[in-house]
Image (cartoon, rainbow, N blue to C red):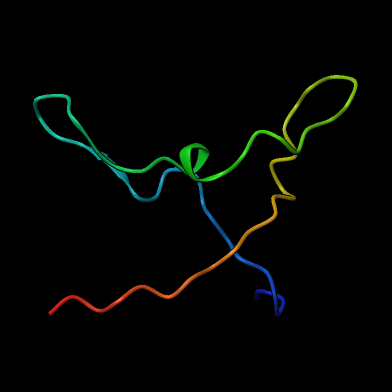
Length: 60
């Protein structure tokens, strides 16, 4: 169960590979910023990334 105001972005979903080796889709790391990281180790905060959702127009 998700808490209100939270968004899940599972790793591995949204990206697939064609038999020719082409990548289709966007990896989660391409959608998130690496600005939010541990100040000492430099490791990104994988579980705490600010997010903004915006509606998109429906395809016609």
